[in-house]
Amino acid sequence: MKILIADDSRVMRQIVVRTLRQAGFGDHALIEAADGQEAFDKTTAEQPDLVISDWNMPHLTGIEVLRQLRAAGNSVKFGFVTSECTPEMKTAAEASGSAFFIVKPFTAERFDEVFAPILG
Amino acid sequence: MSVEVEVDENDLAEMVEQVWESYLDPEGVSPLIPTYDENQPSEVHSSVSITGSWSGHIVYASSRAAAQRAAAAFLAMEQDEVSEEDISDTLGELANIVGGNVKAMLPPGSHLSLPQVSLAPETSARFPNTQRISGVYGLWEGEPVSISMWQSSTDTKEEGA
Image (tube, rainbow over all chains, first blue to last red; front, side):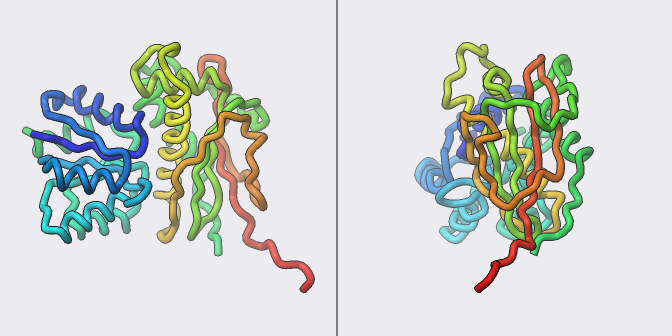
C-alpha cells in the first residue's frame, strides 16, 4: 500500500513514520506532504491508498483537503492525526467521510489499534 | 466574549506528562521535575493562540539545551545532529500539541492558530492585554522547561472618545 503523510511539521511527519514502523507497518510505501495544498495535489497525482493528515495546516486545512477530494470524486481512505480533538471536529470529519481520528500525543499501540484493520 | 476557562494546572500537567511519555521520555527515566517557579529563565519559546469561546495563548519555553534535547528525542537522533530548523520545528509542535489539547477542553467555537517560534527568551514575547492564568514549570535533566496559559483580557474598553 502507498500511504501519504500530511503535516506541516517535518518533525511530526518523521514521528508518524517512526510510529508506523514501531507499530509494524514499515513495509508500506510512504510519501509526504508539507501542507494542505500539497496533500491534495499529491493525493490526486500519486493516488495513495491511505492519507494520514494533520488538521491545522497552511494553505488548506486537513478537513478542507478531505472535502475537496470527496467533491472531486476521490474516495481514498483518509483520517486525521491532530492535537485538536473537539466533538464538532470529529463530527465534521465523520460527516466528510473520515475513517479515523488519532490525537497527538499518540503511541505505537494507538497506531496499531487504528491501522491494523486498515493495513492488515 | 471569553468564558471562564476550565483548564487548570492539573490538566496542563497531565497533557505535559503525556507528551513526555509519548515523545520526550518514552522510557520513563527523565520526567519533568516540578519547580513551581514561574520566573525560571528561558532561552527559546513557542506559542499558539486560541481565539473564540476562550482567547489567549499557550506558551512553551525552555533553555536552548532542553530544546535541542527535545528535538533529538522527537527525531530519534543524537543531540549534536539536530539542526536549528529541527529545534524550531520541535518547539512549534510542542506548543501545537499542548494548545490543541487545551482547545479540546474549551467550550465549542474556538480556533487554534499555527505555532509561532522564537529562538529568544519568553520574556521577549509580547502578548498585549493578557495575564498568565496557569502554568507548569520544571526542570528536565536540570534544564528549565515551562508551559503556561495566558488569557486575553475581555474588559479592555476604549477610553474617552
